[in-house]
Image 1 (cartoon, rainbow, N blue to C red):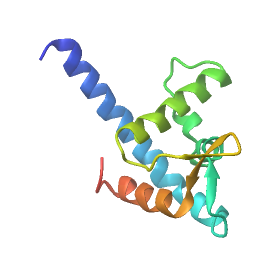
Image 2: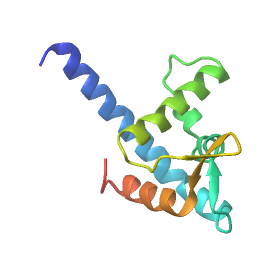
Image 3: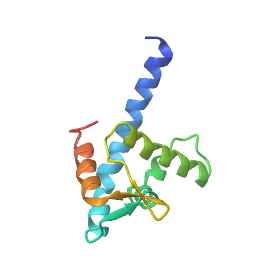
Length: 112
């Protein structure tokens, strides 16, 4: 293992911990707002979890913050910490029940 690989792994772990804290603080919003809805859009998930607020300090514009938050969601999907969204009417949407269940496990540190 070279030094670049170690630094990348450490920064990814730090990023996951930042996302975990953000999910833990804001998960109740999704549970409260989407109690009667079966699907949630990817953009709404980013907004409700306030992932743009924990964007890296190198992100100065709203567009950069949104791109960083979208990358965070994609990292959670790639690591299979949350289920893959389904494409409905041209937008990616998550099943709320499965998403909330997996986000709770992630926030508690049981997965990831």
